Length: 257
Image 1 (cartoon, rainbow, N blue to C red):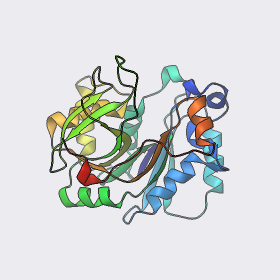
Image 2: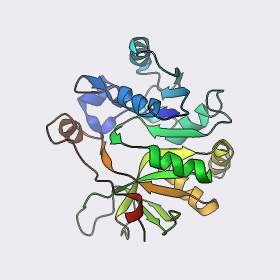
Image 3: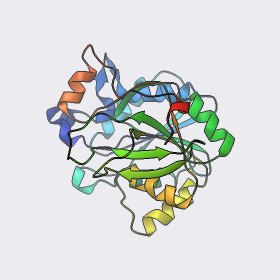
Image 4: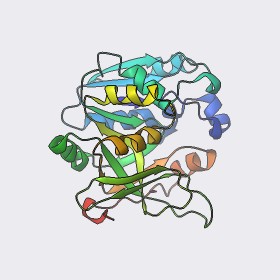
C-alpha cells in the first residue's frame, strides 16, 4: 500500500502552511491515520509506504513514532521543499515503486488528502479476479452549467470495464468520477515508466489512469460510503462540521453506461 502525502496544500491557506494535508486532524485524528486504518482492514496489506516531503518531514516522523502497532510502515521523503520543486503525485509514485516495499507487488495506491468511509472489499475482489487496474467510482457533484468539470469523468460498460476516462472534461457525459484510490497490478511500475518517458503529466494521477485506459483494460467499482476531498478551507471546515457525508457512492451494478 502506498499513500501519496507529499503535496503542499496551497489552496488551504494558513492550514496548509501550518500542516501537511495528510496530517490535518478530523475529530482529533490525522487524515493519514484514517487512510492507513482503511488499508490495514484489508486482507493482504502487509506493508505500507507513505511518501512525504522534506518541508514537513519532522511532522511525519513524529506521527510515525506515535503510530499504534500495525503492519510495517515506511516513510519515504521525496526531498521536495516547496510546491515549485515538488515531484508531483506520479513522480512520487515512481519514486516509491523503486523501493522494495512496493517494487514487484500488487498495490493499493491512494492520495493522502481525502476522507473515506467506504468498504473496499468489493473493489479488491474485482481486482483479484481480473488483475486489471481497478478504480473506485463516486457520483460526481453537481457543477455550474457551462463550466468545465473540476473532476475527472468515467464511463463504464455493463461488465465494469472503463470505456472513457477524461481528466476535468469540458462537457461531462457521465455522472461518475474516480477518486484517487486505485488497485494496481505488479507491472504498474513498468507502465508508469513508459508513461513518464513519453512526456506524460507527472502530477495528477488521473492523467496516468486516462493513459492506462488507452493501453489496457481498466475496471471500476462504485461502492457505498462517503468521500470528501480536503482541498480548501471550506472543505476542511465542512469535514470538521456536523454534515460530513459527501460524494455519494453507488452500488457497482448501478454504474453502467
